[in-house]
Image: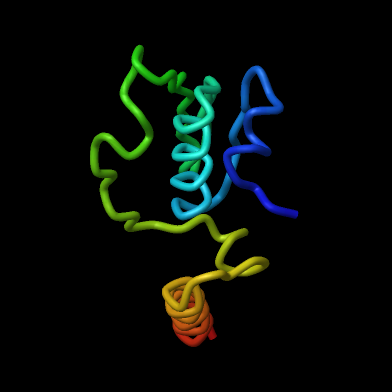
Length: 105
């Protein structure tokens, strides 16, 4: 299926809850091109955010650079690693856990 501008023109509003910036950037661009309002939402740990993106009315998702992510939810790095950094972070968690076990024996 092609998720281009024509696909997004079918909707009166798009609700976004994606887990990566590349997908969010794509949906943002398509909604702007299709002139369809986007409700962008997401979480980072226990923090969450929701923002409305409407062409000509609000800033777009990519209008301001986002800070580079420094922490990753354990569910992402354990169950659905999609970036090499996820594997590195998970290995660090495991190393820290094994080190703690060694010190408690």
